[in-house]
Image (cartoon, rainbow, N blue to C red; front, top):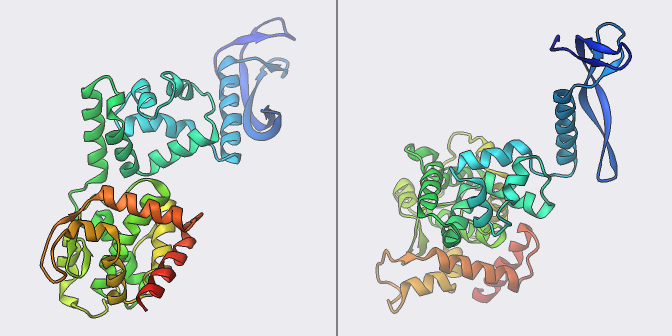
Length: 332
């Protein structure tokens, strides 16, 4: 590939040069890494020559390898987050409680810490998680316009005109296939537990839909309508679902709930939820058999399941089993 001229130290003059691709080695934070880079060579004497653009490209390639090896968020993702959520560098820094110019430095190539990197990965993967941050910390933004622009962009990511693509429908479809003989009653409780435990572990909600406190426990109304014809019978398998629709954190919680909660019948899970604060609080003074569509507040779900996670010293999603085992012992 021919480019502009540059100065050759050997020839002592400006020369044309050819770019050659090769494996190079560089050092970042005291550790050496091999990366795929480029070298410019003089067309007259074939000695290596200096080209600023190529050196910049090599540095980026080296840092990309470092990011990959150390699971640090890529520069492309850092830049894409701004476009994805329609927010500026400084407002985003303030929203996250970072130094005002921190995000600008990351956009210029500075390497984020692992903690900040993980936060950015989570934000990039999960618009609902970002929306929670935006709502919670909007007072940190100097401009209400910045908040409204970002909220509008995020809502477009979360919501879709195609009802079949809503996350709650995709999760329901996945559980029907995964659990085999799941009933509508058990499905409703599984969705509720997925919502709660996802917040406990990742501080965000998977679904935007509200959960209602019905006689038989927590219910998502649209899912009830979708599967009501099955009544108390197991549901048929549906067409295969591409599991790539779920990010890693979502699938981790969904699979754990499928394994550790869907093993119980819908009636057993109904009894679980009847003893839990979110459903009880939403029902208030109503008797057990009184119909209601009172909303189970997301804040109550979040608070309760965070407390459960702390009480049972849950380190990962597999620890959900300890909670369901204890709940079953209490009603047995």
